[in-house]
Image (cartoon, rainbow, N blue to C red; front, side, top):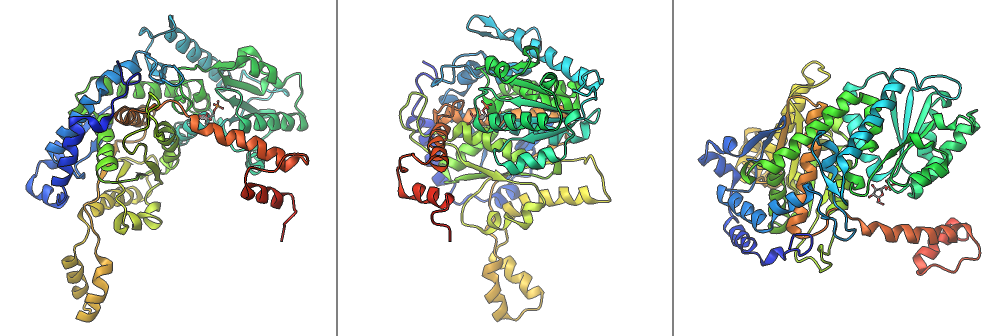
Length: 554
Ligand code: F6P
């Protein structure tokens, strides 16, 4: 029986119990001391792969810790689970579907069977369809209703139909070609609609309606508003097809909207929304950076897939990040995880990671429906450095919770300005160093005395200047951000999330938890807009409905 049919209770495993015992033994572990006693710690706790360099030496681990964590990964069946995912087994048990986002970046020639069909043919047919439209738009062969070329592309989509494409097109801005500008319209808030369309010329704008289901409220409302805007600005019904295309698995709904069949790009049930940027959902990316760069993105992710499948755990980046996360989450009580990219172009990376991690592992029943026996998915947060140092790093350094952090930084900037990048890089390293070293009471007092403060002042201020230190972080370094390295980086975190889901016995590929809010939203909408609706189930909701309708405005 495999992990998705009969998930283990991970807390029953001997390797889990061994880690619990080891945690007690690690109570007084000091990273400072570990570096002092082992001059090879950095070399032995770092790994290179797929254009990325991972330094995981600033962690609360010894070689024994790592060995015990790898034992847990083995005993929990990570290797078997990985093979099951990669070969198209229904690892998404509740929906009885495979999770084959890795097939989207596999080269031609490999075959992956789903329901008796080799899906690789479909994958490469879709890539060819993408190549055709990107080429026609980039070569000015695609014209709008007034025969002008396309200058702006608006992706109408939300969640996985937006966050991945937005992250990548922003991160690869230096690779844009042909001047096609990409915009993202996701929220149902009319202010976003106004802000986006205010910049647009209806004659030169192409809307991509990206929705796996073609049933998401926000997306459909925005698509309808976009059509109204297009017609209101002089667009014609007759040539609407030149300004609206779709990416969806619900072809009929797209046709009903008015999309020409040949302008509908496929999505498949065996790709989850938050894992779909590698499919035609990535069309805004390809229109921004060109198909050649898009294929480099795919091959970078493919290289990480191969690394993940073939490398022993000891040298396996996704497994290392996953098991370190389990170590802090399940044995050190960490409840959240910080992502701190020190690069302007990666400033929205954490938003994509939030959906990827929290929508995948924010679960409390295992694959077989039984309750989990340990904490599962952490809160994912973070933001761009160095800005965070002037916002929330105080808590990371002197707050009460333990919050592990991943720093991500390129060695070379796309935009050198004086010595700015040296300072940015220095700040990234010094933040992880400060988290690890901290500042002892003795050091704080000495520092204050050296400033000439009298002893009373020294004793008064010293406690406030002590920094606990011994706080773990990883640092991922790359030469410079490129399509290939970005593809590898995103795939790295996809596989980290997958491994953690296997350890916790949960399904990382469904998202039943989002359905209730959608259902209740329709009832609240009816109460806001209708006058014969029954009162809300609770006084709070009804009171807020009444407030909206002006009954209780102050
Ligand atoms: O409601 C959550 C969700 O289903 C995400 O998983 C998905 O990425 C997003 O909504 C958009 O879904 P669709 O692509 O079907 O519009």
